[in-house]
Length: 155
Image (cartoon, rainbow, N blue to C red):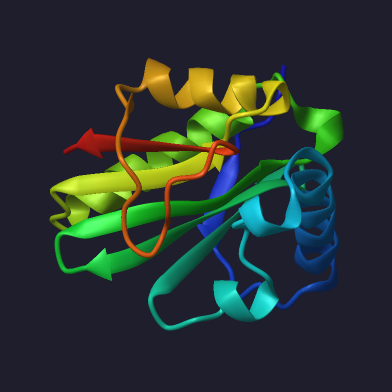
């Protein structure tokens, strides 16, 4: 039996988180051209309008996610990542459910995200669509980009 997933707040300063986020950025940069890679770096994830969580299983860091407050009723999902050895185990779904619960508790009306249009992002797009996210025009400071898919969910 697999141990329960422990999702908790984190300051994105620990060596294990830094290594996981480096793997995340490397993967994003391998799938998208530089001008279309919108993953936040460590400083971006430590901004005041970002809440960052780590996901552990049996004491091992297996994933992370962040929620950016765009305004008092709107949020954006950032830096959803599952460690390569743990993909396909439902970790991303658990993280997404945690983000959705938090967004609702904060009173957000809408939640947005940007992900890639390339085949390597298909699992992420399918996950989000499975939770009711639909494609939308660019939001926030994003511009129309054939390498990006923008999605939203009315909460």
